[in-house]
Length: 300
Image 1 (cartoon, rainbow, N blue to C red):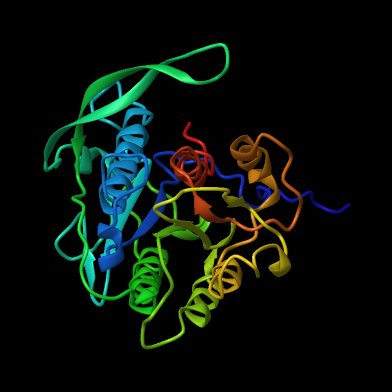
Image 2 (cartoon, rainbow, N blue to C red):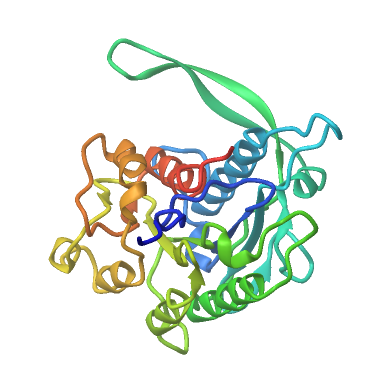
């Protein structure tokens, strides 16, 4: 009689103390990020940094508290890098991943964030509140967009994580949800090397749950008519010469994650769609970040 497999289906492992997850954020901090966002009193760099800070806060807020210690549990580890012609670690001195509970205690300060607090019958916000939030990432912009260096750094961090010994009480890394890389950019690559082969190399490694995931989000100052989760190159070929390359650099959304992805578009996402958004607006960027993190290996 054959034995039934007890292995979990791909991309279904939930984050826990035993099986923590890794997220690597790559943030374009090239000179063009200094441009103002149309209709908003901030630069693209300000907006992107705020979105990431709000995401870290949300991830921390949704991490359960250990009843014995009163501390948040180590469910998620984060590394974040800003890049231009150089790559800079945004959270730790050496770029090593840091667990959320520790990161939560290392905020750089607090800032006031404007948030919609009510919605009218038409779906339009009609009240704004100013909320004080901690922040970990500062906006910055300088020089060129060398995407190759950013993905090389992400590759090295992911590889080190996959081959590192787990902390006490944690399962081997190979049993957990695979690492997730989320890349936010406003422009075209002008680095020395082609970043596309580097993303293929990254996606050739992973865990028993599947290959490492790469999600790319492009946004501009206009933030008009976003192209969300395309499947085929012809869907983005007319957008810009670089859009098809960003599409190819993005992972196909695993089937278990399609339902969460559909919440961004409000309609079903087809099999084969990639984790890529071009010309994202503010609302879509925030939803995309939540999908790429809290919408993957849900917390337990």
